[in-house]
Image (cartoon, rainbow, N blue to C red):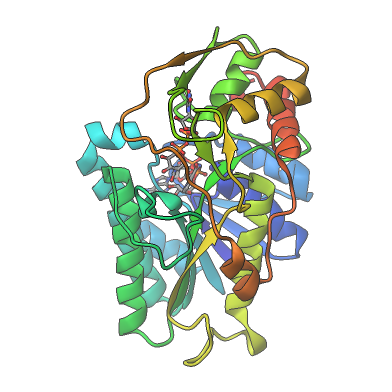
Length: 348
Ligand code: NAD
Ligand code: WQD
């Protein structure tokens, strides 16, 4: 299949382009590089044996996007393109609404104009807000605690409305839990700009000596050891799930799932391992994988955090035939390989 991958130069998108190529699919990247380096394209080329077709286009530029679709002959679209910092979204909410929602609407409109009727969308476990019960399955109450989360929830709703209005359009919103790790080659990985917001990239930067100590946000949560518990998922497993989703949407005969098929219309599916890991458990696993010590201080809780989040991942297995295969040791080993081979990210 020929797949338009919006945001394909980013962290999860780049791994997905590699996973698509491994299955014989052709990824065409559309990215404005607001949060990615064009050099990632060379790395993808080294992993796949050929440079991916790529277009520097903002999803909100309808004319430029239409040109890509007009030349494309796409079977499906995967939509990763978004701003993703929770903290930044609280400071610049309108930029988040404009980019994440404007981009999603623009993409859906271009798909409609060009008769492309299959979409896989990057959603997030953030749409569950503070869990009422664990594990979280897809029927859990939805709520948001910050503007970034609101963009994900509203984007899911926009996509569902578009599917309801057009019987041919089928979409899967994949609700990622906590993606971490990197490709085992060490050639592609997560390259945050500035101070990392997320735990694993922060640990990696402490391990290579770029940051002195980790701050552990809260040691008094009602969890196994007092630190926050999350469902970390290896980015290679996550990338593979996108290939399963695209192939599931292709169904038999290559047309989008018809009425009565479980994937007809809009479907939300969790992507997690189904197991919670605490901050200190992750620190210890990383120390074992890297041989480096990670000094830390336990400090105040971070505003907006919750104690514990982990997925019920069974729907992904039932509908997509996918389950996570890589454990926390692989996550740490591969994150460390990427960080030690590329201490400055794609810049070197
Ligand atoms: P990323 O920032 O590495 O990748 C996003 C890519 O989209 C970047 O290359 C960026 O340049 C591009 N982009 C952003 N806005 C664009 C626009 N208007 N037009 C064209 N390109 C644009 O992020 P990621 O970690 O790979 O996340 C991918 C998706 O998954 C995002 O939608 C994110 O919200 C979602 N998600 C990420 C996580 C996570 O922890 N990384 C968790 C849950 C959901
Ligand atoms: C994990 C745990 C922190 C940093 C975020 C977004 C979510 C999704 C994934 C996009 C928590 C603790 C962290 C640090 C720490 N993104 N921590 N010290 O908050 O679960 O999820 O990324 O959709 O929307 O909110 O991930 O990696 O920031 O935090 O102690 O320096 O690590 O308190 O318990 P989070 P995280």
